[in-house]
Length: 124
Image (cartoon, rainbow, N blue to C red):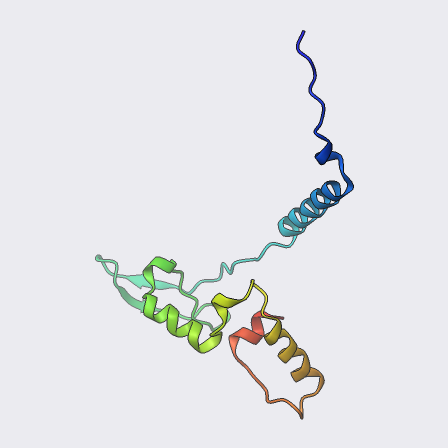
């Protein structure tokens, strides 16, 4: 009869249990509050070769054309990142400088200049 193996002692420590509980909680929160992608794209009319003949605004009067990152020029992506958030590659998903700037800008408006870029809007 095969012997039943015991659970290794490092898996029974409180730190491991708390870590696994936090990871499970984060997974549940990620599934419950996932980022919603817009389904309200603009209408695009293409010719036989796949070139755009005409495009129309969506129901919200916005230009929302569906595309893949591979279809967009790398120079265009670099220009957007340089314009909107030049520190994009240097911080771990949350830019605390921008968040602090946003907080101070909205708590003390006369002291700080207003910034209406996409970087601030993402932090909301």
